[in-house]
Amino acid sequence: MAQKAAKDQQKELLKKDQKHFLHPTSNPKQQAKSGASIVLKRGKGIYVEDIEGKRYMDGLSSLWNVHIGHGNEELANVSYEQMSTLAYASSFKGYSNPAAIELSEELANIAPDKLNSVFYTSGGSESNDTAFKLSRFYWEQVGKPEKKKIISLERSYHGVTVGAQSATHLPAFHSFSGSYMNGMFHALPHLTDCERGNTSADHYEQSIRGIVEREGADTVAAVILEPIQGAGGIYVPPAGYLEAVRKLCDEFDIHLIADEVICGFGRTGKMFAVEHWDVTPDFLSVAKGITSGYAQLGGVLIHDTIQKEIANFDGVLAHGFTYSGHPTACAVGLKNIEIIEREGLVERADEMGKVLADRLEQIVTAHSTVGLTRGMGLLRSIELFKDSKSFERFDPNENAAERVYQACFDRGLLLRTSGGNGVNIIPMAPPLIITEPEIDELIDRLDAGLTAFESSL
Ligand SMILES: Cc1ncc(COP(=O)(O)O)c(C=O)c1O
Picture 1 (tube, rainbow, N blue to C red):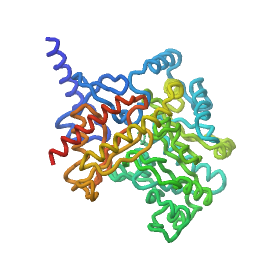
Picture 2: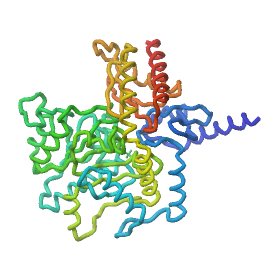
Picture 3: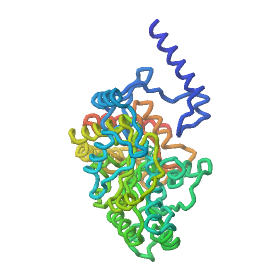
Picture 4: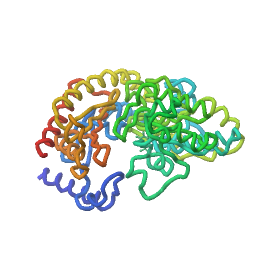
C-alpha cells in the first residue's frame, strides 16, 4: 500500500515537472514527451539517490561543483545559523556584512599574489561578464576607452549571459538565439609558438597574437581563457602556453582573465589552476566550488593594480547584483573553504587524480573505442574513437558519447558528454573527497558501460 502511494507520488512529481519546469541545457521536446530524465532527492558523500531509491555515483560532482561531497552538515548548519541571524543584506551603496567581509579576506589569502579584492556575483556567467565590464571600465579610467575587444579561445565555455555566451565558443551555446555581444574574437587554443611571437608558425593569424596584431592592441581590452578547458572536453595547455599568453598580454597592455569557475578551489590539485604555471592573471573568475554548490555564489578576484585605479573613481560603480555579497552564500563559502583546507582536499585532488589517471590509462588499454585520456587532478576525460589505433572518428550520427553516457547512467554512474560533430569526449570530475576504492568503483562502472556500448556496435 505504502509502495503504491510512493509510486503515485513519483508519477505526480514527474507530471508537474513536465508541465511547469523548463529545464536548462536540456532537450525540451524530449522533456515534453518523456519528462525529466532523473529526479534526485538526496545525496551523501559522492552518491546521490533518485525518487525511486536508485543510487548513483556522482562522477561529475553534479556540475563540476560539489567539491566536498553531498550532505555535509557543517555547511547545512552554517547556512542555518546565518539565515537565522541575517539571511540577506544588500551590498549596494556601501552596505556590508560580516560574512562577505570575512570571505573577501579569505579569498585574498588563498588567491595568487596581488589578487586582493573581490566583486561578488551569483555564478560563473555573471563573474565573466563582470570581468569584461571591469576591464573595459579600467581602460576608460586610464584614458584608453577604445580598448573594448575581448579575445577568448575556441572550445571554451564561459557561461550563457550575453557577454559570457559570446565568449563561449561551443557551437550550440555560442549560436543560441543569435544573442551576441560585439567585439568578441576567438583564437585557436594552445598555439604556444605563435603566442611567443613566431609569426611563421602554423595558424599564426588565428592565434591570440595574430588577432591582436590584426585588430590593433589599442582596441583590445582582455583575453579570457580557462587554464584547463573544461566543458569543451578537458584540454590541458602545453608547457609554456599560459606563460606565453601572460607575456603577450603584458607586452600589449591587455588584461588576462583566468576563468577558474571549474578549475578553482582545488579541482586540479592546486587551489587555483594558474598556480601550476606560476601565472598571475589580472582578473580571476570563480563560482561553483567556492560553495561546493551549497549556495549560489560567484565572484571576480581583481589585481591590485586594477583595484587601485577603480578605487580612484569618484562616482557610482554602476554594476552589481541583488545577491552580490549575499550573507548566507558568503558564510557557506567561508566554511566550505575552511573544510577544503582542513581536510587537505587540494592535496587529495592531486593524489587521487594520479590514481584516477592511472586507472583511465588501463581503460584506454582495455577498450578498443577509447583512444586517449587527459586531464589534471580530479578533472579528467576519455576520448572515444571508432578505431582507437588509427584515431578514426565515429560518424556523428552514431552518437557515441551519448550512448556511453547512457550506458554508464544505467549502471549508476553520472557523467556527461563533450565534443560534437564526431568528437566524442566523456569528462569526469568526482568530488574531491573521493577515496581509492571509490575510484575503483567508478572505473568498474565506466568499464561496464563501455563494454555494453562496444557490444552494441
Ligand atoms: C569555465 C566556466 N565558466 C563559466 C561557467 C558558467 O557558470 P554558471 O553556470 O554558474 O553561470 C561555467 C559553467 O559550467 C564554466 O564551466
